[in-house]
Image (cartoon, rainbow, N blue to C red; front, side, top):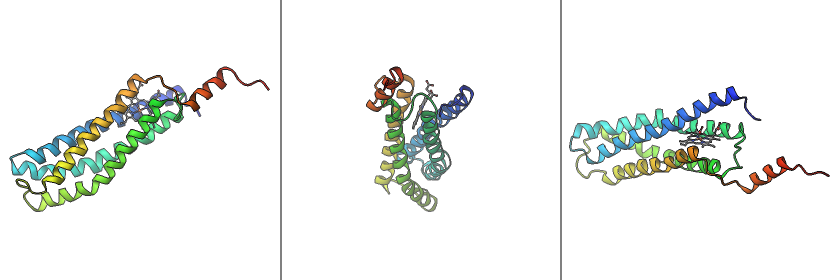
Length: 175
Ligand code: HEM
């Protein structure tokens, strides 16, 4: 079902707000993860992990789901479709993968927030876990830049199913 122009613009505003907001929130999370790893100031390290948990739980996870769901509506409710253009499908796959990895990291994020609240995370204590969070946040940010660029460039490639649909529309079969 194709959306009316007014509804499409409204949903597009919501889509861009949630998805680009997601990029910004992950960037903020990454800065805190780096501070938690390298800062010499114990207070900053201690404060970073609970702040990361709050941002992840109340900003990043909701925005990731919003970007996915509204992206789906935007695909199915416009001429773009979900399986017609490679750029749309690639956005879905990359955003879904990033969201799955994020959900898998939530336990570690919560654990680090608890540990930081109870102890001083000095020197190399839990260094591997702290590096894991930096790597996943950095990787996630890089991955999400791809859907961002795809949205603006909208490379031409059509999926075969999409080709067929286009041909059928241009030259309907006369039986
Ligand atoms: C973090 C991930 C995402 C980012 C940063 C993002 C960003 C954007 C941006 C900036 C636009 C506006 C482009 C324009 O109007 O020229 C857009 C449009 C669009 N996005 Fe996304 N998006 C993301 C995820 C998704 C997902 C998961 C889907 C599909 C399942 C999707 C489907 C679409 C579609 C179909 C449009 C065109 C809508 C229209 O023309 O009305 N996006 N996206």
